[in-house]
Image (cartoon, rainbow, N blue to C red; front, side):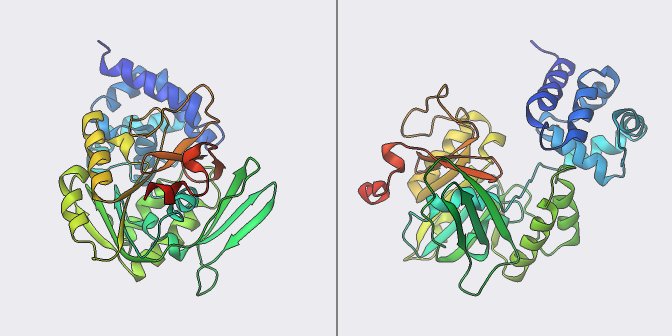
Length: 338
């Protein structure tokens, strides 16, 4: 059985090799350094595994003032502040709240007749609960689709690259109720929330911090119902409080990866029993798809699905979208569901 040090070296090595390149060269450098540094690995081994993801560790060190431009400097700071980092990581969670994910989810959400009661598991500060308050720009080979709220362009404009030949069919949803469940819900109006969510933005990512900041202002002006607790424990209870006459939609964008396998299945089943279910997940993450996914033919990215039927492939954070050409994703499939 692998020892914690071996697990840490493998995890940070994989992050440096597969996840950080193209998004943050600084994080790639830090992670590669950790993968080869037993002394830093020993510090990280003191952090519970569910609080030890590379982006979480790096965000905590930056929040605490590391500010180092290269691995040797970061390493020196890390070893000098080891106790502080271990304690802070232990009380934090990876609550990446990227409103751009709404661009990946909107084509699936557009298939659902409103009014809609929108409930998110793992909602963080609730920034993905406002797809009707954002502006969208989908750009592909066929041109650009621009969609704005009825009140005019939003301060949050979500730009999404469309890959492939077919553009998405989209409409802003009529959302009459919004709620989120999170182990540690964040208050969108709190300066501490803004500091933490902006700290989770990877160095080198452009535009994301401003997008999060502007989305926080929208959420703070009209706060959703936020419930603290485990998704599977609270999902049925919170779903029951949705208003009568609205279609309940449960979304799980990016959260299922942080839930153990058995409970992951329970969240999926509970969501599908309670209402419509929208998600964006790695294709191999679970078996909640209604049709098997051919991983060898998959074009990359995550799978976007409605009620388990894969609609599209997309960037995990919503930067691009590509129609998944299967019977379930073609026009009329939602109506045929009944």
